[in-house]
Image (cartoon, rainbow, N blue to C red):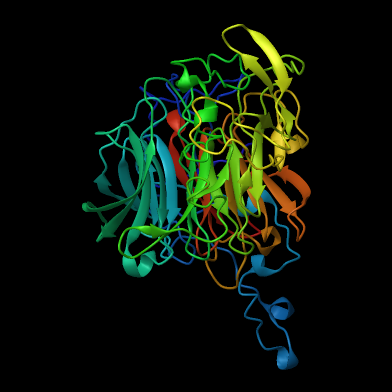
Length: 527
């Protein structure tokens, strides 16, 4: 039986008209955002089976009408001589041995329409900042069940472009700074900019542009757009290869003919002097510029020093583990449905990647578990030798960077049509790998926070397959299990998941079912 959703208004407007989302039932979606028609609104999104606050009530536990996670009492909440309370056991979900059922959660939906939600972040007061693809920023106050419009950034929203990502400064509570990645309306570039948010208003005049990423708009696709901070104050940005994927038969696009540079991902993803097809890492400074952190991939003599991870096709979201500093991202692969290893290469794979250090991650030469593509002459229609994943060489005339590249790193998880190493990822349907977030439990926080049982878990989203999964690892980051997560809820168009500073899970959906949810833990005894 599908779980359902708490409502705080009489009706929800589902924005199905003129959506740019195409959620294909089979065949790779290629990217979460495109020029396809909208999918149908999801069904079964009426009242909650758990019993949360009534209409107009607060979404936060502890307020009138809200049944939250119960505090621990009795022997389970005491430790040490004299039975003094253990400060680590404030709520029942702080018990490391508690693995609660999914009936312990309720969905709380933003009480206002959201048009093509693209990205969200949450401040330490539990306010949710929602960026729409059209450039509008909204702020949701769950405690008051209200939403305010903070401002509108002029954006270009063709192809896969638009408002792409928002991440709040680690010191947002005192400095009010937000970092927004968006497609400029007055230039063919995507900008990573710092803005000031004051009294619920986005100050457009406060913009400081940190990075300008080239954005060819003659042909589609792949602009990426995920952002996240690490605990050292470094800001990460994922960028797509900005390459047309439709003239390479679902294999590697490396057309080196004159005038065909838009069809050659070597000019971007495999180019050490191009921002595209990368995860960039910078450290913003108070004056609106940035410095280069240590241990990025290249020196300025070798390439662009902002590059941390290269060889990506479309790293749509990125997430950094606050405990380890390891970087995670999903990379959406090409459409090829059949292995043609001798003449073209493997069928398309989507990847979830883990980077403990800077590196090259293969595209467009290798994919998955370092399966090589084959060099192909797009004019003569003849095949050469497979690319060398251990020592890739960029011989494209469109390359302006290093010729010899670092060894390709295999994917942490990869899967293709009809097969997956983990059943929780579902072998059927399209493929669109999007990283969610990493949970790090800490004492205190919200009564609605995730249980301690999930401490250290990496959460995955699959946009095309409408599912979430939980990856549990050992201390070295090696996978121990991949299991279903929140699969009793109905999802559609999962575009981002983030965990608030107080430990509460949040989800954004894109397209016809565009909305934002706060996933409240309300207690293992919930009906």
